[in-house]
Image (cartoon, rainbow, N blue to C red; front, side, top):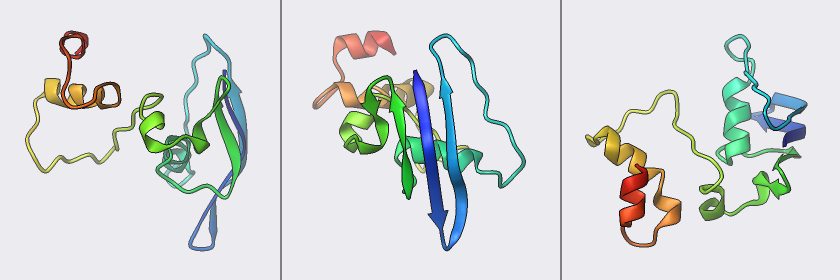
Length: 116
């Protein structure tokens, strides 16, 4: 189960999210919809650890997503910004392989290459 409980985010004195709570049960499908400025991207950034939260929790099963160190968090989630513009040219294969970084030490294994 994925649970968000009382998540609040404030920036520059404005509440961007105010006590957001919901849960998604295994097998359920969910969409986040709303007008521009409603907080959709802020919610996703907060859950991914890319936006500081003022209060609240985010759990995936028993794992507290907001307290994980970045290297552990990377194994649970992936974020690709809606305005991603790489400065270097990557092939699609190379970009997908970057998602395997949390699972190898110095270089990708044969298994990593096969999974991609």
